[in-house]
Length: 277
Image (cartoon, rainbow, N blue to C red; front, top):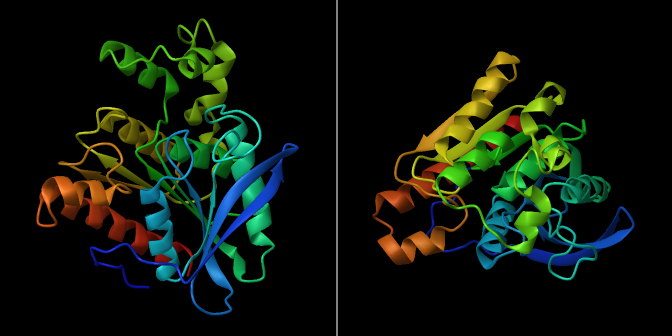
């Protein structure tokens, strides 16, 4: 599979909306299909944020399908009409695992060649989910939080810690206030259960999830003798892998920002092609 270098978002040849059950909740997802009968290698794409599938996320899922991958993109509980409430890297992990089960039973999907791709919130969800299944072959971890404790300290020190209801519900005043909430979201403790190679993509100028998070994750994976590669992009901030249209409009396609975004995407495509062959 060769990476797509076009500026224009690819259009999947077939797209479907489905609803599946996760922990008794009806959760929505989108499916994106290449041309043909398959079976195709699969990607479970786990999106960023807590507001469902953005137009940019859908464009990237379409691009994956155009490159020959069957794609499922769950919206998680509490988003885009899915039942339940947003939990942030808690119930969403089960939503992804249940999406994987549904996805793997579809006749056009090669269930033996499936990867998780996650960005930001979806990266942490993907990592936690990958430690609980043997049904995926690879993981792409895009600018996600690996060490929840040091990240919380970073947000406080950089005065980015929100005071909204969801932030307070999940993190409260910190680990001493919500110890269990931090424990279950601390990915480093479950890495011994991880059995797949990891590609870590991180922007040096990320002010939301700093470079340190990717470095911490790779260091820990190396200590555990887990296969991983860390790719960093000196001019890129948060969301650079997905929100390419934003960078095109702001900087132009000749800009270093756009070129790094495409380079990261192509790095991911090479990784997926190698691990899902």
